[in-house]
Length: 141
Image (cartoon, helix red, strand yellow):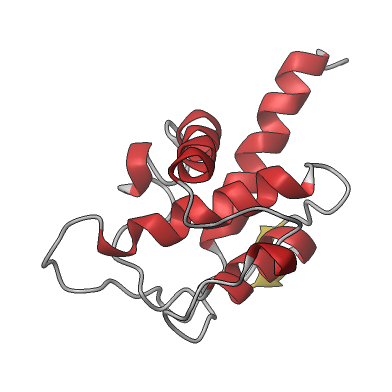
């Protein structure tokens, strides 16, 4: 059965967003890298964060992590101070397999700018619920 290009792209974007979450082996909140380390993408830019959030909500809102990272079939992304930018980026870019779950590599599938925008969106959710205690990913993922 042939998949339409639009559906195929939608599935790829969904997998991409799922891969952002599996970056849970990260060390913890850290300083943002300067744009010269991110291909010119400023991870603190509201426009970049909005672009990344649109990617997350569109690709994963109804399936994996819920709209605004609230969680569905995959863990929530909100208040995840344990996810460093470098681990998020590495997992999205190169993928990983852990505990029988697969995070695909998005290198060469999505433009680097989209990958960095998604990283910025996940980072922006670190304090999404104000004073809520940080959530952590179980080690089984």
